Length: 210
Ligand code: B1M
Image (cartoon, rainbow, N blue to C red; front, side, top):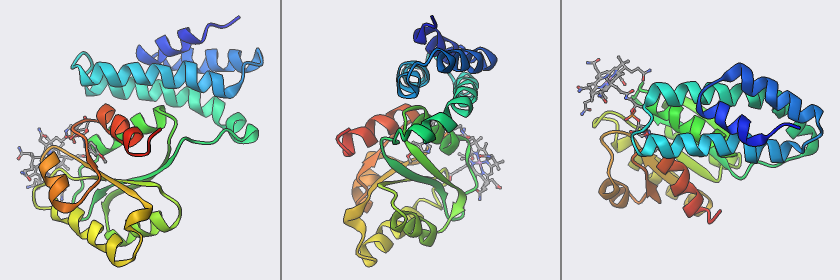
C-alpha cells in the first residue's frame, strides 16, 4: 500500500519520475484522487513554500519541486476532472503591461497550482483589458506582478479599470514583485501584497477566507 507522505517527500526533493510512478500506483490502489492531491502533491508543495519562505530553499529547488508536482498532476488531472474535484478558487495571474519579467510570476503561479487553485496564466505584458476579461470570465482573484518601477503604475490602471467597469467588488487584487510594497498596495487600493510566492498563497487564502 502506497504511503502518500512518500509522494510529498518526492515532490520536496524534486524526484519527478518517482512522483509520477507513485501517483499512478495510488490511483491503481483506488485511493481517491482528492486524497492523492491533498496529502501527496499539495502537502509536498506546501512544505516547499515554507522552506522557500525561510530561505532553506532557493529558486532552483522550487522549480525542480514544481516540475515534480506537475508530473504527478499530469497523471492525476484526467481523473480529477472525471470525478469532478473542484479547484479551491480561480486566479488569473500576469505580469503587467510593458513588463517582460516572468520568473517570479511563474513561481507564484506554480505555488498556487500546488495549493489546489485553478490558474489562468495570462503571461507577460498583460493589458488592463485582458485582466478585466479574465474577471468577467470568473476569476475570483487577479494576481499582478511587476519587476520594473516604470510598470508599477499599470497596477493602478487595472484597479481603476475594474472600478470603471463596476466589477471591483467581484474580485480580490493581489500584487507582488521586487519593487512592490504593502504601502504601494494600500496607495492604489489593492486587496493584498505578498513579498514571495508562498506568502502569495497565504494572502489569497486569507482574503478568500479559505
Ligand atoms: Co530585468 N531588471 N530588465 N531582466 N532583471 C531587474 C528587475 C532590475 C532590478 C535589474 C537591475 O537594474 N538591478 C532592473 C529594474 C530596475 C527598476 O525598475 N528599478 C531591470 C531592468 C532595468 C531591465 C530592463 C529595462 C533592462 C534593459 O533592457 N535595459 C529590461 C526590461 C524588459 C521589460 O520588462 N520590458 C530587463 C530585462 C530582463 C531580462 C529579459 C534580461 C530578464 C527577465 C527574464 C524573464 O523574466 N524571463 C531580466 C532579469 C532576469 C532581471 C533580474 C536579474 C532578476 C529578476 C528575477 O527573475 N528574479 C532583476 C534583478 C534582480 O531582481 N536581482 C532585473 C528572481 C525572481 C524569483 O524574483 O521576480 O522578484 P522576483 O519574484 C519574487 C517576488 O518578487 C515575488 O515572488 C517571487 C518569488 O519569491 N513576486 C510576487 C513576484 N511577482 C509576484 C506576484 C505576486 C506575489 C508575489 O502576486 C500576484
